[in-house]
Image (cartoon, rainbow, N blue to C red; front, side, top):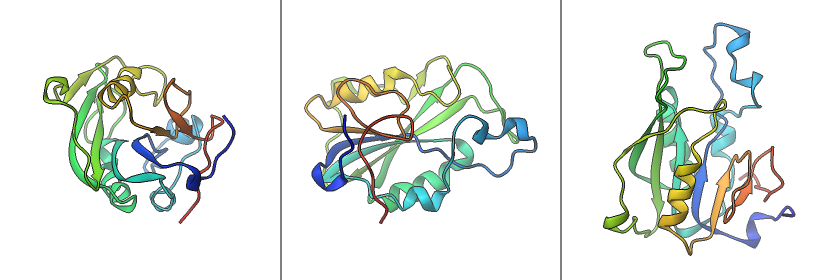
Length: 179
């Protein structure tokens, strides 16, 4: 897909996994930047997200970045509604606790209806952890199934999926402007 400017299209569904910057790694070998470039919270907040006036945001964050995730959600114009947790079934790094989960925040802009009651899932998803920072494909597919006619954007995407426009430094997708 060729690069498009945000003014050309807006999205009903935004699915985002920002490259959070962590500043507490005690070892250079454990730094996130060994895997991919990260962004500051203010840089993430400064992106113009091409969301429709009535849209939904699914935003990945971690326990240490929960407040930053809520700040990003607000900066992008979304109001917090709920969250789900991905149980990775294997513990990872951590200082207070060895992290075994990630948080998927849900926010809306304007009026946007949740999935039909019969389609709503429990708030804890159990999928094995894969490659560093890769989110379960099942979550993206679930969102697509909930909103099959929606125009969808996956932000900070690494590998495109059918039915989604993409933005990220590892894919050829849309171009986001700064505010």
